[in-house]
Image (tube, rainbow, N blue to C red):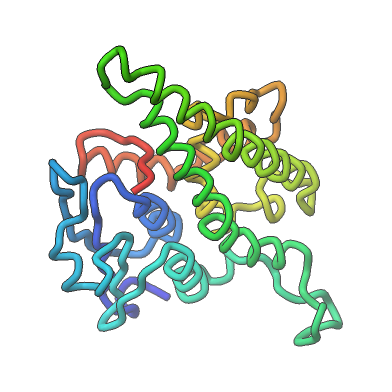
Length: 256
């Protein structure tokens, strides 16, 4: 679909949010779009209340396509891939001769559907707890309080984040190692919308932002690090980063 044929697309951009992935997908799909910017409250870090005029929850990302408003990253990315990707961002759905049959889907397609929802449904909840743990441990508190914050963050790490990080990132490493068609990406040899969804937690891990996941190294998880590098090498990713720098003055992965 050419730019002149589709309704106007507006990305409602909240600074320091996971809208980064939607921006990247729009760049990858090479469709025209506008950006409506919103700021966070400098004291509370909460989203601009004007976002509630767009969607009742007042959260980002939100994408308007004509009169239709889409919220939730996976919904937005699925819709964009289905309607603007000409099939390029979604793996082939059916095995030959098994079209429209239960169980007739290809492995690549089932991976695609899984990772589109695994990212926010299973992995990001863990990542957010880990980032809160980081904030507790590194909080600028008086020296006599520091042992308490370290103990709290240490207990969270030992009892929850560390064992779960180990399980999840081992799973991702194995999925990359066994991807169809020789791999390179999670669903096979080509980039899909699921890879863009997964980019946020993978890049956080590869760049060392998940401190409780300290065992994630190039030596222990070579496929994850190779995958992260491959994502960052994408020309559409680089264009998205450039636009984010223009919008915010810097590019920084943010859990918002």
